[in-house]
Amino acid sequence: MPEERKRRNPAIDKKISDLSTDDIRVALVGTIVEKDAEISAIVIDDGENKLRAMVPLDFFENSTLGQKVRVIGIVAPALEGSEFELKGEIVQDFSKLDEALYAKYLNLK
Image: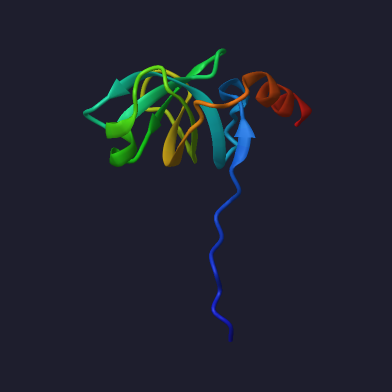
């Protein structure tokens, strides 16, 4: 019998305001507006809403306030504040993102 391979859910590009309880794994783009060293978390702002994302320690240490990033991770209920938070698996520097083009892309979806 062949070995069964587990697959991750695909990360769906979303705005923070479009998150729902049905979402499992998403990709969010925003600017880092806060950092919390105690829990290795960042708060990203996509221009409309904010969301806290737990991120890998190596990224946290090398990130800066005002940096544009894409965080790919699992949606979870928030412990405090907003409705959701993100358990970040991958964080990418999106400093060179064409924001107008990205907004068109999100509107097409």
